[in-house]
Image (cartoon, rainbow, N blue to C red; front, side):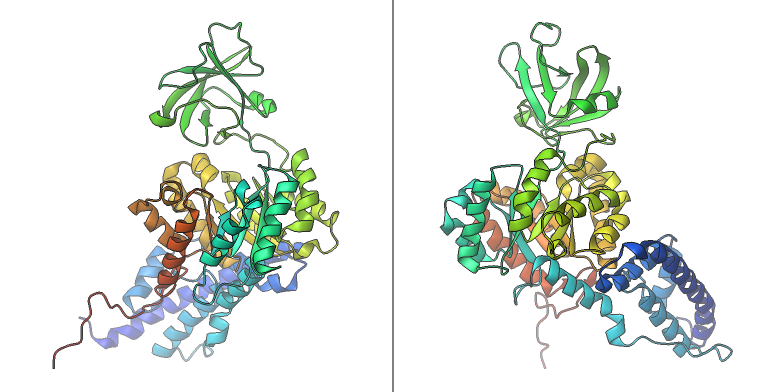
Length: 500
């Protein structure tokens, strides 16, 4: 082990590097923030937007070499700077100056604890505003998607809320305003207004399978089968015994040979092998053999293809008449740019004067949305409360399942840097909800979900069991970790009092 006298030399070498990094991050962040400033109407978001700008500059550099050198000296690794970029750099600089003073430089300024943890406080306040306050024993919130039965069975709704649901979700792709109104009435009858918040998801331009035709009436597929993605079904085309249409035929000219086609939200994968006058020929390349059945009204995704669809459909605009007056949160499906956000905000402003009180939930479902996430956050949170949903279903298909785990982490980091709450969604405890039995992997996934401010469960026959399990998991993990930071509670599993 080296003598302590080596410390001043090693620390003084780090001091100018930290100072230069801090100066660059501050300058670049301020320049980016100036571009954003005209869109920020909520003064409470200004400090958060500035920290987000600092974070984007901070992460433009490969910090791994610097991080390891700091770790070896027992100083911060910079790996938890999301919510407090400049404060973290200032604290590191001040620690170096205290251990190895440089009398040629002015004294370093050490942020006090209140300043240092200000970002954490802002995130907590923004989460409470956007999603409602957490329950006293569990900081993470639980959102449950309601099925149609919630309109006719108030007891079911009450049971979910008693078990621990903080928010309920209504998917506007299903049912109608009359059913939605009865669902909401049943929620309000249990808790009144505001205690349990209602999210209504407008459907967005979700492309689905349309009509399905097979010459023998069977719709089950196998690897290697060729299907016709047709403009219109034509049974006279004997060379194509299996045909289907899609609900947005205008996207077909945008597809080319080699493009991937996901059917039924990833249960079947194929690729375009040729174009023909009647449409596109799709070869089945892979899939879940137990579920390879072609059905109408199933999700159809073309990963990597810019579809050019209007982010707000005619149905969405019609549904917004109800949503704007009944919901606490508006879910924006397939939002991809700040312009998309501005379009929805304009529609909301036409429907209620206090639209800025509505929380916007930006559902991140495509690579384009990921790339534009900082701009989406600024446009949305600059004008109203915001939460970001990591919609892992379509996002996994668009990015590839291998990249999803990496990207969901980066989305969490970016949201924390902007002090914006995140929602972890899609297939959380899915086996438990469907069958009553959970897999080991999905329990681990639920633990990881606890780093978000809210976790969403989908509907199913055992949803009550899933709420109980998630409630227990979130309570346990809250004592162990906050975002990326372990809290270092005392471990009891292995420790025993020492014999005297």
